[in-house]
Every structure is written in C-alpha cells, then in structure tokens.
Amino acid sequence: MASLLPPRVPSLRNNLPVSWISSSKPTPLNQFSPFPEPLRRSRGRCCALIGDSPEELLVNGLHLDESNPLFPYLQYGLAQLQRVVGGLPEIDRWEVLVFAGLSWIYLTARPGVLIGAVDAYILAPLQLGLDSLLGRRNLKMSDFVVGERLGEGSFGIVYSGAIVPKNLSVEDRLEKRGRRLEMDKRFKEKVILKKVKVGTVGAEECGDFEEWFNYRVSRAAPESCAKFLGSFIADKTSSQFTKGGKWLVWKYEGDSSLADYMNGRNFPFNLESIMFGRILQGLDSIKRSALIIKQIMRQIITSLRRIHATGIVHRDIKPANLVVTRKGQIKLIDFGAATDLRIGKNYVPDRGLLDPDYCPPELYVLPEETPQPPPEPIAAILSPILWQLNSPDLFDMYSAGIVLMQMAIPTLRSSAGLKNFNSELKAVGYDLNKWREYTRSRPDLRILDLDSGRGWDLATKLISERGFLRRGRLSAAAALRHPYFLLGGDQAAAVLSKLNLTN
Image (cartoon, rainbow, N blue to C red; front, side, top):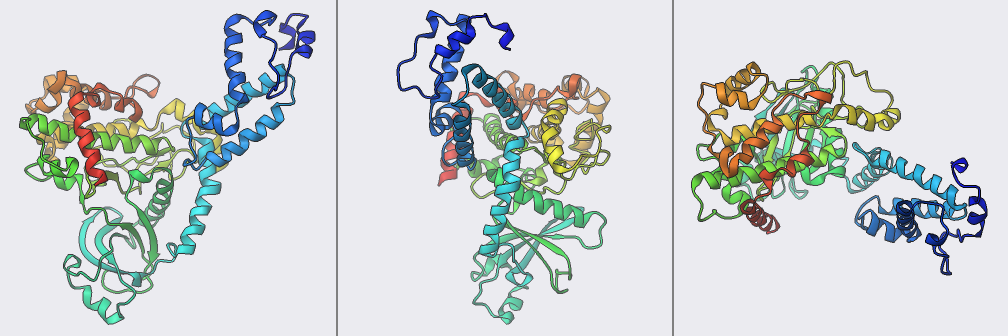
C-alpha cells in the first residue's frame, strides 16, 4: 500500500498529529493531504467515529444500548481496539481498521457467527447456571398434574396441565387428576405438557432437539415462542406417564392454535376481539377480514425474521404450529423439525421432516449435495457463506405464503381443498398467476385483491420456486417491507393491537 503513495508521504505523516485523541487542534488536512477530496471526507468521518469513547460509538454508531446483552463485551473489545490502534502510525491504523471492519461485517452477517459464539459460550452456560439455582432444571414428575389431551403429532402428545402447589398432599394430587383442571381453583399455575412418545422411531431424538431449540430461541428471540419451563423424565409408570419417558413443559399462554380458529365457521372474526381488543367499526366484512388476516401475517413473519436472524429455520410452519395467546400474540411452537444452520444442529443433508401440504418445491432446506456439517466451530465460521449462497430462510417463507392463502381463501382451509390447490399449483410450475388463470375451483380472492391486489402480490412473491441463485422469494425482512403491510388503515389497526397487548 505504501508504494502507491507519493514520495513525500512519509515526511508528511511524521509531521501530522497521530495520537488517538489529540488534545490540540490538528493541522487542517485539506491544506496538504495527498488523498483525494472524497476520501478525505470519509477519513474525517471515520476518525471522528473512532475517536469517540466505546460507549458513544456503540450508542451513536451501532445503535446499541446497555439493555443489549452484547453491550459490555463490545464495549470492552472496542476499548482494547482503541488502546492497540491508538499508538500506530495513521496509515497502519487504517489497515487495522479496514481489516477489523471487514471482520465485523462477516462475523455479524446472518446467521451471526459472533452473536452465536456469545450465545453458545456465555449466555447458554449462564442460563444453565441460573436455571439450576432456581430449580428449573430439576423438574420432577410429581411437580405436575396432567389435564385433558389437546392434540397429537408424529412424535408427541400434548396435554393441558398445572403445577402442583407444594402444600398439597400426595392423596390430594392423585384425587385431582380425574377432575378438569379448569374447574379446580387450587391449581392456579397452568402449563402445557408434551409427552415424547416412547418406542416410536425418531421420537426421542426429536424431543431432545425440541428441548435444545426451545432453550436457544428463549435466549435469542423470546417473543417468538411460548415460554419454555424445562423438561423432566417420568420416574415411574402411572396414568399418562411411562417410566423413562421425557416430558416438555411450557407456560400456559393459550391452548388454541391458529388451525383451531381457522376450523371455526366464523374465521377470522373469531379472532377479531383477541387481536384488536375490540370489534372494528365502520368497515364491511371483507375489509375487516383483511385487517385481521394482515395482523396475523405480520406477527408470523416478524417471528420468522427473528429466528432467521439467529440462523434457525423452523421447517414446519403451518397453522397447527402457531399458538394464539390470550393477548392476541401469535407464537411459534413445535421446534422438533427446526435446524440451526449456524452450527448444523439437526441438519442431515438428505433428510427432511416436513408436512407435504406446506413444504416448498425444493423439499430440502439446503441442496441435497450440501455435505454433512463439519464440527460446530468450523461450521459456525463458514455459515455466513453457506447462508448467502443458499438463503435457507426462504424455505419457511413458502410455508408462510400457504398459510396466507388458507386464511384468505375459505376453500383452502379444508384438507381436501389444500391438497387440490397444491396439485394444481405443481401442474403450473408453482406460478400463482397461472394457477389463478387455469384453476377450476373458482376461489374467492376478494380479500387478496383489496388495495390494488397488494395481498395477492405478496402471495405470489412467497409462493414460487427458488429460481436463479436460489432466490426468487421474499425473505421475512423484505416481506415486512412489502406494501401489503404499509397501508394507513392497517397501521391504525396495528396500533389498536399493540394497545391491546399492553393491557
């Protein structure tokens, strides 16, 4: 780099003030600097930036505050960087800063190597230690009473339940098992329990992955999933318990999924007061339906954006895996099929756990020729390259597009209607516009066609093949910037929803 500079540069450089923070007024660079004017302006801005204290740089430059868990670590790192770079000649300082800047960009690009390392080696052990002190990692079978069965999947059965108060005797606990928990006022702390099936191939592994991902998401994106309380192993066979079987426990936030509401005849109006805290006035039924569906989609895609930012792909987005809380929040559940592509967790190149009704045409989150992931530290370092080349987050976005179509078009809410839609869509090469032209089902598209067809346009950008360079669909962040979510009436409805959530 020095060979590109004019011969006078060394003497000029020796005469220039080069301290990290100069107490005296420096000589104006525009009088004799060998650098072009645009570069001098950028250098001036950067010098002002690196001259700030670490706290000012984090708050003003990177827009981080002390509430961010990375703040103290970044503050310490910047202070050390200032100490090392401050004593260097200016041209060497620039080389260090360029290298540090490029490294920072790479380490913070999705899926976040730096943040992932902090999570794995600092936050996860801290969470384990804190949970152990509070007894959250020492749950026992006798701590819970099991209520009615809520649903069943391939690898587990979900029940309502409650935490047994410590002042109840063993006889009281056994007596209450046969009664409805909702009617028993002695059980105030409600939970959701999931029994991992015993003897089913793959169930135990899936349960272990689901536990790991719930802890991971609870640290990285707690607003996106139900609050996970932990797990326990049944110590004896009794009633629903099988000795040696694993149970997962969540705080009760609601026992109805989006699928439950969609099966109701009055959907989406059965969610109107839950989502907005009131009945929307002054609108016809189509516009009311559109606002409710739009608010649901906004929450789904926002949750996907959060988990994708940490390197996690859910791989099983569907109405049954979206729980609706009592405050109108949509939260992701069932992470048994999820994969963390930052370290290759739960990723096998030629295997996918998926629902064919919601699965995108590429079938796999990464190309089949992608090799088995290397050891976790190496996989983490290489993950930004893998993510940029393959955009695995777009796998979930296709599924989100199917959910949008189901909510907006009543005939797609039935199993037969959805299978027929997928069959017709495949026949036209996953082109929604062609499907609209050739389908014989005569779907009701009035909700998607509102506001100049913004809803339909979003659907076409989510439901499509990947195309050139494995792009072709909107990411979660890009979808939230789509005009579908940027209309004035919708923003007003969103304000009502946020007011409802804070009540």
